[in-house]
Length: 136
Image (cartoon, rainbow, N blue to C red; front, side, top):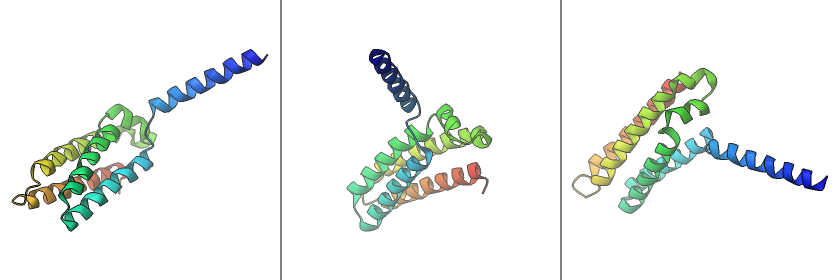
């Protein structure tokens, strides 16, 4: 009896681990994470801290690709009545990635405004996605 119980527990844990690995993102929690990177980047721009801005931009680029870059994953995370809008998220991920590249290549003193405008373009991509997906 003990052996069967132990096998059952191991099987249950294995399946729950596989399920957790298949959906590693909680949309709300990860959106908060992306928002925190945006806030950190904004503060860094205001403080003139290039390194902090670059770190936040790079983290934002990586995390947004992981969260938003795969349309199938996004479709599964959205509510059923919004799943058809998953492509909007993947488009936003591409816009974010492109603007992160602009930020990374424009952080010298001469093109600081270019980097800051790229930050604003990321902000617009985020708001566009939120407005369209949420029907606001």
